[in-house]
Image 1 (cartoon, rainbow, N blue to C red):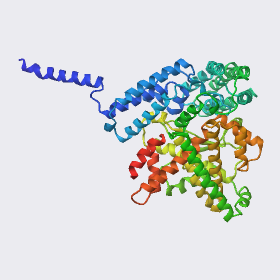
Image 2: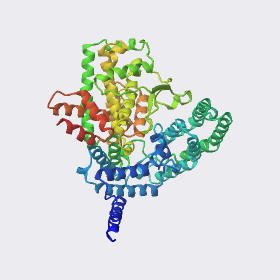
Image 3: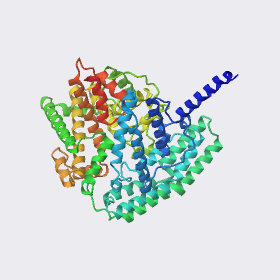
Image 4: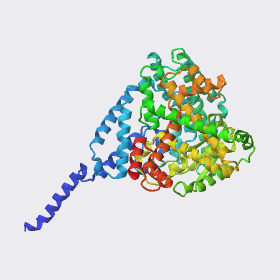
Amino acid sequence: MKKKFLLPIFLLFLLSIVFFLSKNNLFLTENHRFEKFTSRLFASQITSNTLNLHYTLAYPEQFGIENTPICLGSLKQENQEKEFASLENYQKALEGFSFEKLSRTNQITYDILKLEFSTQLSGQNFWFLQEPLRPNLGIQSQLPVLLAEYTFRCGKDIKDYFSLLSSLPAYYREILDFEKQKSENGFFMSDSSADRVIAQCRAFMEDPSSNYLSSMFQDKIEHLKASDRITEKQALSYIKLHDKIMKTCVFPAYETLCQELEKLKGTGNNPGGLANLPGGTSYYHYLIQMETGDFRPVEEIETRLYQQLRQDYQALQTLLKENPHAIEDLHTLSEKKTHMPKEILSYLNQIMKKDFPSISVSDYKVKYVHSSMEEFSSPAFYLTPPADTLSPNTIYINKSTEISPAELFTTLAHEGFPGHLYQTLYYGNTNPPLIRNLLGCSGYVEGWATYAEFLSFRYGADYLDVSPDLMEFLRLNRCVNLCLYSLLDIGIHFHGWDQASVSKTLYSFGILSQDTCGEIFQYIVENPGNYLKYYVGYLNFTDLRTKAEHASKKEFNLKQFHQQILEIGPAPFPVLEKYVMNAWE
């Protein structure tokens, strides 16, 4: 009789062991353990900011992310300290994985996370050197644009949007508390920068009845009503509530920002770059690592920039000597027929196929920036879609910006094919781990788009019906300008150049207007490292291409090289180089 119970008891024992092993992750492979770790990391990071969540995932509930608090982030020092403590825990957890047992995809993620954690932790001592309020790229200028583009996919999105608007007074009060702490410790912005921030906030509030947030909201509500997703009564109710929140929350928040910044004027003693502040050069190097993904010493990056500047400037002079009519041809270029953006993108999508791997992209749109937003928008930009839908894909054109047909062509290459839109969709279609959406290196992303832009100059001659020499002249001129601004960035923030030093350098390149020199100086002062994301990022791609060509044991294949970069996806350049060169050496 006892034998009849032996098998069930044995199975029960086995099941209890399996349950114990799986509960403690002992039953999982190293890859499964690592993927669970990155999934938890993604969920914890993405839910800390509602805008990041909304723009990253269209349907977060499908990933088990629900009922998240509405939050724009925090600048409280105690919260930052908690984040650094969490980073240290994540770093320790990462060290517990066996790198050799991971798949190549997970090894790439591992290497990026390892570099990301160590770099972020190295920034713990730079608290007062960060600046959330900047005239061009600060929170006060970027946040309204992100809110204006906030997609309404369901009723909850509208509710969350209203909650975000309502949270602005408290959010800006927290930023002002931080600015007061900066002031007390001698790190507040210069009066020139404060005046520019205040002027931008005043412009935002200038005409409440036609503010672009209200205009964009009404357009989106009208679209929902036209598609029968909301009723006429609901639409009127939403618009009325929006007007109320703008009057009671949004505009008062901006007014308070202006008033408090006025009070803090005079407490900032540094009209120049980061080099003039305690710890400023170290912080600048940290910014380059975080934003550009380049981990070389600043001096080495500077040497590479000077080398490229000499090379391109000499090439420019040689071209003009051999073809003195190139500049005269610029006048005829402005008289050329202006092609429609969709036509240019379609052409670029076809002509690039000889150099880049093909993907099927048909659902992209070109829209024009709303008239109320033209003053605050760049000439063109690509709005990155959520990772779980990879759509919609929209490139916005600013009609108020005067650009030539050649500039429109290369700008669309930067934003569309083979730039941002193409790179985003190509990598997105490889089904990457979700955590990679939070590890997008700006140097890779902007460097790739700049690399694509410079390649497009040779695509444009036939399409625009101009000489290849003219397009090469334009390319070299663009290269020289971006390289020069990148060197000025290093000069101002690493060497401590003042406006007179910057003006002297610009004079030598034919920029004689003192107003222009002053504007360039002020922009770079307020946006450290911004030009380096584009140009140093671009140089990293060209240098990696040269290394791959030299290492290739057979004929170098440019399309294959591009495919490797696209499949690895956004990454710091040491990681990108490691995996690209493994394939060529």
